[in-house]
Length: 115
Image (cartoon, rainbow, N blue to C red):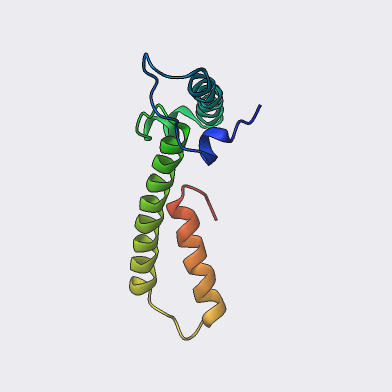
């Protein structure tokens, strides 16, 4: 089974009473990988992360939603790092290496780690 079929190809046209057997088979062939891909993606992420993603019934839309959330997080993180970089004063007595290590320590502390 091509689990990535739903990510590579767009959803076939909706079925109607006049849909041909070929159209029905194509739609069915797309539906199963779509459901399976969604299930795999949702099961492999924590409940906390999954709760922040918009509910989607298509694997491709779900993946796009994850990408959009990550992009926003990345922008917020970059803003926070720029603020830290701009506000942390360079101590000429300690040198550049120590200044960079202090920036890294501040980043780790901001993530909840310890130095």
